[in-house]
Amino acid sequence: MLRITIDRKPETVLLKLEGRIAGPWVAELSRVWTEINPGLQLHKLIIDLKDTTFADAGGLAVLREIYSSSHAELQTNSPWTQYLAQEISDSTIKADEGR
Image (cartoon, rainbow, N blue to C red; front, side, top):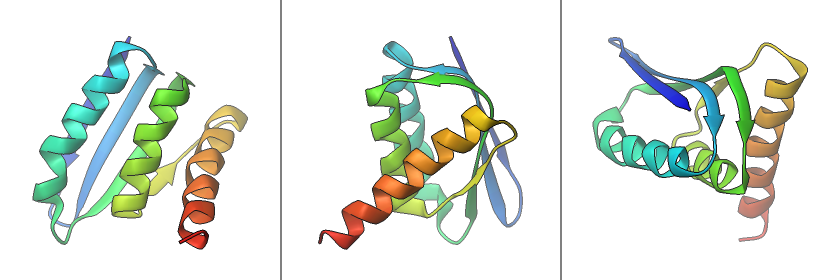
């Protein structure tokens, strides 16, 4: 199960993810990203990973895509979510360096 909450503010858009980013929920996150991405314009995207409990390879791929497109701020609060944020940002940096 994955709960996705979007909180739009004047200068930021918060994408709060709670639960597992795996299986069918990967497609749902991708769909949500496709919907909100065009509306971001000059807004800063913040991805709240604090209540994320798991991400499979597909989930990581979508998170990397979101991060590389938006250079979002990743919010964490535990060793697991810090590891997840590092996996998202490090792999994106490595991919950019390879170009």
